[in-house]
Image 1 (cartoon, rainbow, N blue to C red):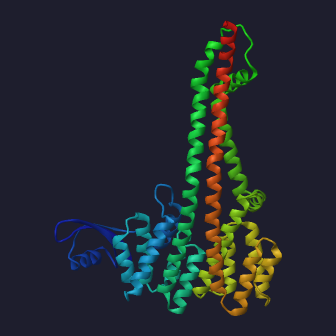
Image 2: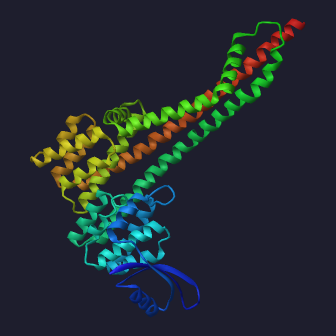
Image 3: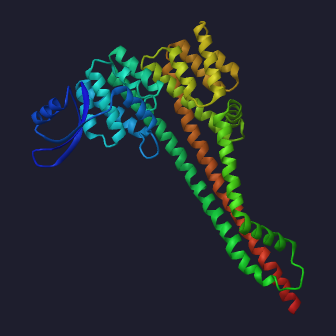
Length: 408
């Protein structure tokens, strides 16, 4: 059975597009007529394996699937399955209402695999860029336990909570970043367009200019002549930094260490990593994923080499029969409150509950810390911009005052 993409007219003469599974073009045309639509064009989709690999390669800035779209799909699939609708018809419903062309093709391919008797897990494994190991393992556990709708609901809850946290962080940082760029552009325009015109009146003066004015003129001339060099240098630094921190193991380890050790920001990044670790581990355990497999997945989710190594070491200790809290305590990265609550959870058999409590606490602390930091950044940036503008004004007015004194 193959997947066909069609364009047809419904009973009211309106155009309709979609996908259909059939053994051939004639069978697809017959199925569409039985559904009350009249096909105008039917094209066969690419073969399964070719399609899966090409989709992975063609996910780009023009055509991609966002985390929000995957979260919405997961929530809707959970709702349909919870209402008693079988898996294949559920995908047909989702396929009809999905707007993203790439996601629609992927859903059509998964539906085709399901019709062939494959499991949902095996179908989703063909698209690792869309469904990461964390997602796949939870779906696998849900299929094994017969609670796929509940697992999908947990997946949707987890994804939405992570998106909400990151959205709040971005919203808190948006104003200071915008303010910084606007202030930088304003000062650059002052230095390259306004200051040169004003300081032209000093060129004919036969007197020594104040040091502060000389410095201002020098900076203004440099920015006016070599602004392109500054932009090129900034671009080069960004490219080299990206390559060093993403393309080399040494650079990545250095950057991950800086991210958790840098004053103020390091503490916030560590809290974000701990919240992600505890929330993800709790979600996996609640969905029936074994502890060792869950910890292996989580070690790649925290997005920090050092924390990932601590989790991997803890997984080895757990495999040897030891507790989870002890190796986390010995690492020195996890605060006592985290390790103590994990230890209590292990002893009482409520590890998932304790992990969720830790995640809630650290997500709230992260949001609070970022709000405090941004509230301090705003007046600091205003002060810096004020000092820069004050330097320009004083540098221009000082020689004018000296001229007035000479005239008198």
